Amino acid sequence: MKQTVNFLISIFSVLLFANCQPQRNVEDLKDKFRLRVSAPQTDLPSVILKKVNAIDFQDSIITIEELDSLGELVIEESLHAPLLAYLVVDDISHPVYLKTGDDLTVHVNQSEIYFSGKGAELSNAVSQYLKQSLAIREQYVVSNGNMIFNLDYPHFVDRMDSLKNAIGDFHQAFIDSVNLPQELSNSLENRNRINLVWLKENCELGNPEMNNSLNLEKSEKKLDSTYFAFPFSDTLLKNQLTAIDYTIAAQMYLDLHVLRPAYKNLPQVKNGYINDSIPTEEVIPYVTNQLIENMEISEEVKEFLLAKNTLSRIMDNGISESTDSLMNNFKRTYRNSTYTAALENEYRNWNAIIPGKPAPDFVGITPEGKKVSLSDLSGKVIYIDFWATWCGPCIEQFPYSEQLESEFEGSENVAFLYVSVDKNKEKWERMIKNKNLHGLHVIDAEVANHEKSVWNKYVLRGVPRFILVDQSGLIANENAPIPSSGKVKAEVDKLLAKGI
Image 1: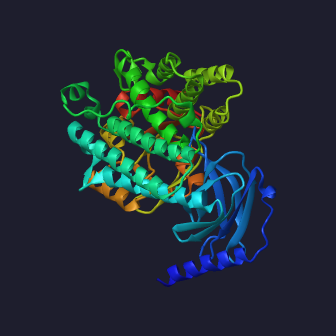
Image 2: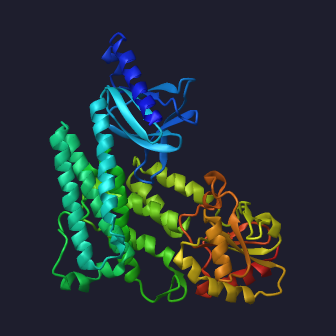
Image 3: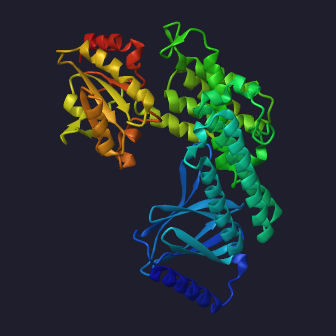
């Protein structure tokens, strides 16, 4: 209560102080915005103002500033169009809606923010709208303890229809009470729709039975096919309030309607190989790209989807002949694309761990608390298994790993290292014990430090992931076969024959 009162007093003091000041010339904010930050109760001295790049969800830092002794600072930056930025204070990210000419003060009190000054009405409105609409979606995702992802199709349709109606009623009530420009109101309404589209697609991806054609044909209840269809829209792609959510929905669409059909149509696939010889990751990039090329959609959306698919294939499979081809083809076709920088950045990340590059060293902690580094195993062929307790496919590989390890029993030249990326050490230790997992198991000692974590060093975009390191400590295969493929022993034997 005392903190709340102090916060209100702080706001009143700032407003009173601002009213006593001479009027600033608004001309000095042409093509700019000014944002004063008042965070007297913050624990960390730095404040970050950032935006998020839609194509790869990476932060783009606008500025990092230090608070003064009163917990205040002023940010002034160029701006030519409305922007949904994020203000990070005490590691909490707050959405901030900014427009050209805004002269705002943002008052921060722990997890709450409030705007005053020129442009404050819309900034406060957007902040509240985003917060309340998110709360409604979360309420319907988990209702009476039943996760929407686990519902059968008829109940899923009921839940989605109820959510659509609830979010529609909220939007109407909000714009009735707050005077929003029509364009802003439309953007927020479109954002709601895109959020429901990607929620629907995510549910279908996670629950294949939900997307079963028989379910759709037999069910009397059906979703509004127009409202819940992915919109191939230039406007939603470019709008600051919808771009991030549009990108999420686009990724779901590609996974559900491009990648999944591409895999289904491949002949004789088993354990990631076609006809037991051709890796699927060498074929899939070409197939998915061709499916997108054949779409009758606008060139802007097609460029975006091709960039997103190229990025996803590099993230999933690393650098290969097929991803090289996709990358070069995209750069030739779209010479001045704004997406190229993100593709090249991901390419550079992977280039650090291609075969022949030194395997980045790291330290892991065993269940007994002993430190083990990768370099401790130098001179051996090392098969690294990156996994997590929450990863079902990871756990499914353990029986095959145990069988594989037994084939090299007694060999001092081969090591199997199981590296957990879990943040919950106790949960990891329990699984090791309960499942009686054998072998050298460690948990990443730097899991809390992204820059130093194995997730970052080895460009992990998901688990399980398997990597082979040769006896010289160099990467031999950054996307090694999974234990159940039956192909690992041959690769290890080949490296042993090669020697140091």
